[in-house]
Length: 420
Image 1 (tube, helix red, strand yellow):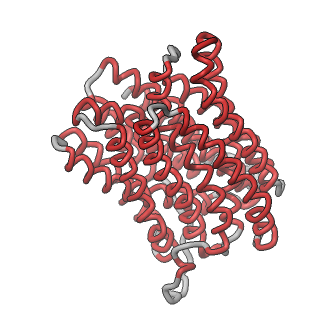
Image 2 (cartoon, helix red, strand yellow; image 1 turned 180 degrees about the horizontal axis):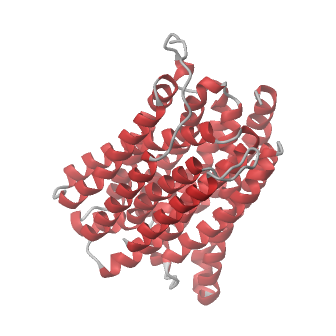
């Protein structure tokens, strides 16, 4: 916990310093630094337990691979169910109270994992956890859009996502290290502590006053950004293999005999995400949204083909493959780090200001649907076909399908319908 307290203090000091800056359209304001800290701590708590959950379910409850995939997908399905309603609530009511409420529920569930003694109880907690995460992530993404200057929105969203990537860098690596040295209860308690610090940071964020809006009749476009559906389909197809990677890559590496620490995979991936977000956000602010997404898609295709190739390569070049495995992680981070800010901005630019919550919800819903499918498919393929490599081959095919669809349909649709 000392390192989390130190990071929180760093964000606090940065916020104090930024509040005295006098630049026009300054990015690192006090509020922005606070919400960056809250976002980092939220995702650190999430990523700390993510890679160890499959091992936990197998060791503590003797769950098979298909059952592991089903249980983990419950979290994502719950996120999916709450996303559309989250957008509607955030566009209708004050955003910060909803953000803090969801953040608190999300954090408390980690304490529930400590005392869960039955598989049914664990599944119930995962469902509630998914509902809370679905709400808090939409709220956080919407609030950061509210407090960012419009001229630097793409860059700001990139830095906001960078907090996720830092969490991805530290969380899985620390979680896997603790898995070998600590009990599961200790790991869950550390996630609980991270969430509590995050709530403190979130409470310090001052959001702009939300202007009263007329209560419009309830309709489909209050829960789903209809104009964002084509882009949502493209994003969904990309998120399926991404979900397989982040959940099962540790098992895949162990299966084929890669000796490199799997925690380093997440670290290298996070480094790639961090580097690319900084530069891609600036390109997005220059109006190159579709070009940035296309470049990321090409690189993602290469990464999934390379992951599939690792299994046969291990038989002939084991040492090189272990190093190549980490290079794939770095490139995969660059690919998705390039696309994330662009897709987020794309959805926001398709919506009027009073539907920012709905736009963010649609963006994250598309992502969650794909992640949920990936969790179930990954576990099924791993058990049915005896190797996760086939899941990555399928992921390469889905990436090709997503790229073609984006170039032919989603990209032109965005250019014809964007509002800003």
